[in-house]
Image (cartoon, rainbow, N blue to C red; front, side):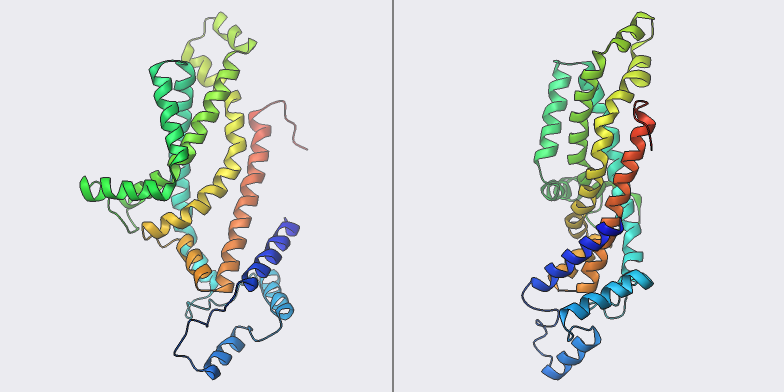
Length: 295
């Protein structure tokens, strides 16, 4: 994990400083003297290797990403502390929606293979995967906010304001999970132990939920790690569309305005979340599949 953080930090630092321009180049009315003072305040007047070491020292020794360049009254840590709960809540709601809808659709599609219900679910899953979430969000805002007036089009603080962005964020992943669940269920339903369970007189519901679903969940579990990363990065655009005060909106602004400490802080937080989620996925394999031993 330490090596991963160091590699991500180094690549992010190099990419940020390789982009032409700086955080104060757009300040047309600022004199050269004030610009030099601002650069000195944020150590931007020092050689790049010294900037690299100073920022790394603050992160490693103090866990401090430093002050934000564009949000002068806030540190990066304060912005992350305020935005993380919003992004986390949005991601959790989106993942719960994706898992609930995807697993249900995948199981039903496998149970009624070749039927109209199976075809309908497969078509919806393909549409969910193919349509980008920002396109889906735009259509959802027009339909559910302006036409039907069911949900607000922006803002944060109530459950109604969470529902629409969470559905738009989780819809593509629901499609992936539905397809993975259907494929896993079809494979498991042909196994000998499933036929034995039916031969013992167990009901279809009992066989599917207690025996078949557990085996069919393995491809879904392996997908949850990358899906979490995709939900986090996908929320960057949706948070801007729905005007949510999460980490994504600050990340986009940091990239556009060359706020180096803010961009570095966001990248490192996302890296940590992805690493933790992939580790949890590996651990869950040993819980779900008895053939896998934890060492």
